[in-house]
Length: 378
Image (cartoon, rainbow, N blue to C red):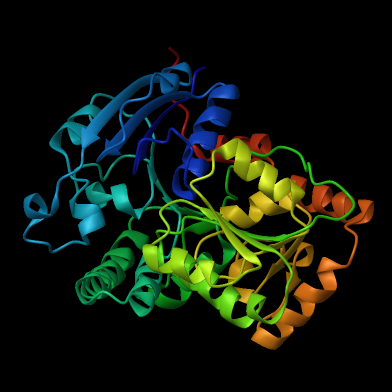
């Protein structure tokens, strides 16, 4: 008996160069490994087709996203309306296999009754309405702020609708609580993120700098770096490295004003992993408490001490593995202390135990498989 599954992806999941596609790609990889026959549907704006996906999938379809004018009038969130393509529905109707919608973004079909008799699951990457609300609060550009606010308003209505229509697989326990609180969601459960890391490679001992890494083109990440510079590293001479793509000119100039701070712009994956591996302390505060911060999981698998605030670890099932500080004074104090503290073998063992329990790709793939209705033999 062969199990078939349609996966509708918000983006082409290769290369794995941002958190949103990491969960998708490694889920595909592990489902394939346990024998699931995958029919992949990818929306794309700029990312090209990837031949490697054919190694894991029975077939791969690509659909061009609509640009803003094509999505007008916008009664649905733009992220949803721009991923409405008639060929997707036609392809999904060729059989009766279960469907996994990877993200609110590609769930347009749930606003219709076209597939009301199919087994469909929604993978929840974020409580998107809240995520966009936070983006709006951090945004300085008037028009982008207006867009984020409107998208958040539309998303709140839309997420309420879809939460009533299909079972939801959330990668964050805190987002489960949010959906229950705001939308009364009942059919929602925890399925941890699928990651690139299968074992803890952090090394005992001590490094020589603190590190923040992330996509610096996202305003909440830029705000986190600014907060660290102004509240922590302005008050110590400890070396601080900021690594990530798309830093604004404003952020680059700000980093240059601190003699103990440096920027590594657009590091390769190999270079980034080396930076994480050699750092003494990964400092990863967050100002958004939705989803799971995959950069934090990266640091826990591959780096030494991790210092965060409460929003960074909400919903990730890893609170005991991180040092937590919420006020600027506490963050500075713990940075100074941890920079002088060896990272020990006992911490590596604890991480291995906790991470292997929650972020076990093979076991999580089997858990997903168990939810699917059996399909016909090939």
